[in-house]
Amino acid sequence: MHKFLPIAYFEHQFIPFEDAKISVATHALHYGTAAFGGLRGIPDSQNPNQILLFRLDRHCKRLSQSAKFLNYDLPADKIESIIVDFVKKNRPSQSFYIRPLVYSSGLGIAPRLHNIEKDFLVYGLEMDDYLPASGINCRISSWYRQEDRSFPLRGKITAAYITSALAKTEAVESGFDEAILMNSQGKVCEATGMNIFIVRNGQIITPGNDQDILEGITRDSILTLAKDSGISVLERPVDKSELFIADEVFLSGTAAKITPVKKIERFELPENRPITEKLKEKLTAITENKTSDYKEWVYIIPLD
Image 1 (cartoon, rainbow, N blue to C red):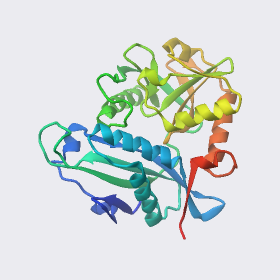
Image 2: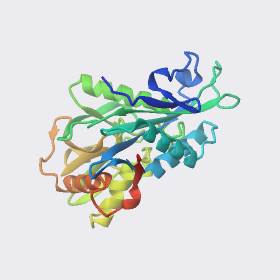
Image 3: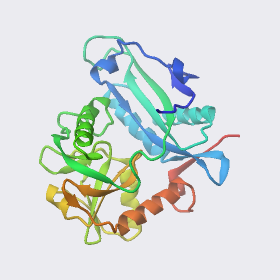
């Protein structure tokens, strides 16, 4: 059972989470005319009067860009201000996840983006590991990722996640933890809510932005960390067969952080994962404010 944070931002005000309710006729509920963000926060272990948010500016910018696809002008600085106030009012004492959502709040029956009300809400919940930190087993999904020519994949549009839901349930019901989606060209794309990386001969390889992936913020962070650490990085199309013979495979995302993959289909992957572990260690130190590197990635919210 999820433990939700007690205060939500809803209809331009902060109210108790249980009072934040929408109508059954809400447009976004019927047509997927919404976009969401997601970011993690943790209390600073070195200063209990501080909350740490990872790359708040990038998350707010991406959500603002996603809102544009919905004909909604929502500046990133307004999103950031509301999220900061949201954290201060909730004063979370454990690791948590923030879910901001922009949506068509009108009650119209026609599928459209013009001449319909829009709104913005924020809620949160306590969250530890989204996936087992020790590693997961994956299958190749029978469902394919959408194409950018038919869907705005640069935004986190809610309607897109029906494919993720179908793929995730297919994976779990067939004995796996997670699914790997291919794109319409038959190349490796991403997991149900995470980007994917493989390591071969000491080089990190990941599908590029031209492969219908979500432009992940954790993905971007990993690419920067790898390059700055002297690890060779290559963004290019990835074939399915490469997954099975990779030295390492891992997934990345706000919820998943860095999660190693132990097995794909019937193919066992090596237990030794030096690059995955190195990047995971670096990313954890940054998000927990335990290093002087990449200070600009951590937004500190004082609670006093």
